[in-house]
Length: 226
Image (cartoon, rainbow, N blue to C red):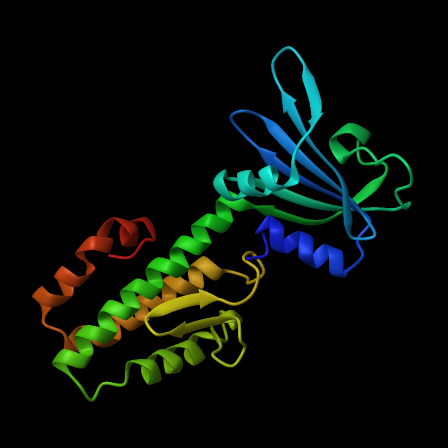
């Protein structure tokens, strides 16, 4: 995923990026800041805000990368208009936006929702595929899945099986592009799940279908399905 901080740093390194990355956390209110010069990390800080004061300290890059994977937050990437020289430029929330422009912003909590939807959607497809092989061996699950994706692609382009943005293989669904880059991703996955469940329901005994979907009932209700 693009909001994997380590992968983001690799991408910015290849682009010889001048600027900084902010990783904003809540509870406690903290902001990790990574300064880049020509794509190379030259300084990492953690700014902590308390009711009485705000203070910054140097912070290990590896620790910040690990923290970003464990805590939901917001990642901002900024490009500095003038190249960083001896001293790192201050981040936007300290400079009031005068010295840098934002290039990328991602709410990692929202990304986690998308990742969970992709993962659980793949699990449901896998369960249905296995059952259909048992009760209706001639049913080509992958063929019908591709057909449904093509039908929905006009509304949700990322579902187009030829677009290379999402893939279902070996019982797993995977997003092949950065989270947040596909429009209406969650709505598209919901639509695909609904269409597939409607399609296969006549071929699976009702009791078996209910038992199959039961572990996902709370998730499906949360998605407005079922």
